[in-house]
Length: 214
Image (cartoon, rainbow, N blue to C red; front, side, top):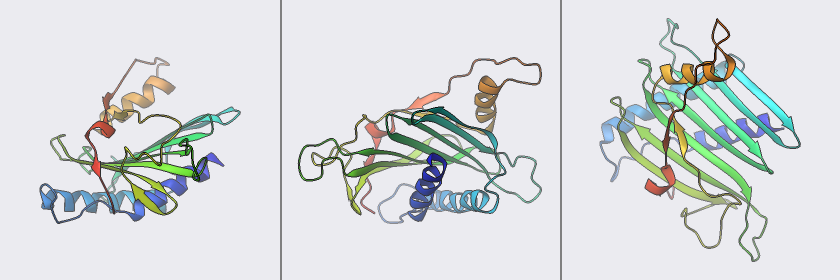
């Protein structure tokens, strides 16, 4: 069930591709990121099972996913993608990372699903906290946007009417495919059975996000 929910979240967020020309920093760079994201979506759609990693259940609604579409050796110029998820206390947290052909991070889309905890007529209704991060080839963050999605409408992250059961949490920032590989090996081990520790940088995206009404 959680795997299907993860794929559904990716599909919903994919429908809102990044790139809006008006009022955005470096419109050309954002357009290029949009093209990269479209290519990353195609990787997941065309090869849904061609990932390396794990999808684990710890029972009672707890589990995690790490799905890495590693296309560094591809002769067709395919992008590489990392999709991670965590499930706990009836809540799902998801993030998908899109990488350029050179292995640099281009785009992150993230979401957390939870019942609404604000008292009133919408108590316990489903709400999603969504975020988008655009990253330049040099690793600098061009734009961070976010919104709460509930009943088909978008609300600011600090909405008084809608709030999730857990606060917004920083995202692990895997800046390139080398860091993705390090995260995999830290959990699964290398060819020698060793698990060298690796902790990625954390991005406090909610603190920097601008409201995305689209």
